[in-house]
Image (tube, rainbow, N blue to C red; front, side, top):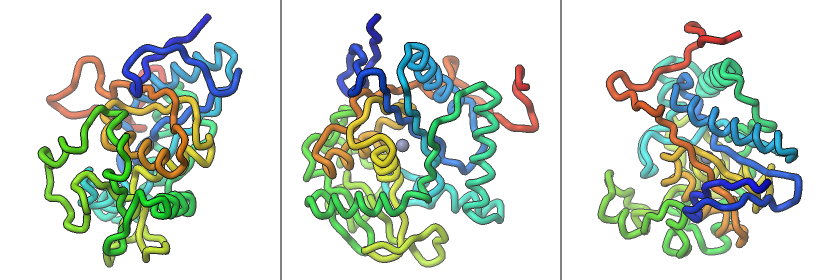
Length: 294
Ligand SMILES: [Zn+2]
């Protein structure tokens, strides 16, 4: 019996046919581990778990990769703002990696409690900086990126397909920019592949462009390629990740490699069906056991 999925990339329901018969390569954007897992995360990962379990039930051998973002996810989407991990670590007066480890454990605790299957590989972004630098170098070499002031940005004008996943046009962003654009960017829609570390920034690595840290989008693109290849079957994530995060992943990967990135994009609503707006998200906390937790 054929399996049909709704593919965000083509915006239609399509028959799912993996690249290699009997085998499925699947990546899902994992959590940024700066706080407790909330019910929105749970909604997303339970949804993806249903997909994973169903594929395995059908007999596919699935390799399921889901990253842990422990560096480079900034508090705003325009490449300004603070690193979420560093900001919270300063508030809690712990090392950034101590904070990341704490909330990585909390995340797995919550997922285990919900009986969500653990990924086959849970790569940490901080453990794959070498691969991310290699990808940035490839983009520079192909003319899809430029260095400015110790940071490296993706040049959206060099990649005409930018916007194909989300359906957003580059021009829309010029008009609708929510925040002031960094003067070192050539185009308001350009996004950071590598950021120069300011003095006092703890999470930093040496690179050809000086000490800095990777952009959030390049992390997922580099880790997906490392474990699943340049082209793989399924990329999943939350609906609110389509833009800019997933869009930027597609652009970087396809511009760097010249082949398609993920073939099927599955996006799940992270909001519960009845949106909780009054009190914000409900957090899944180990000291308040979930019903049915064993
Ligand atoms: Zn991601």
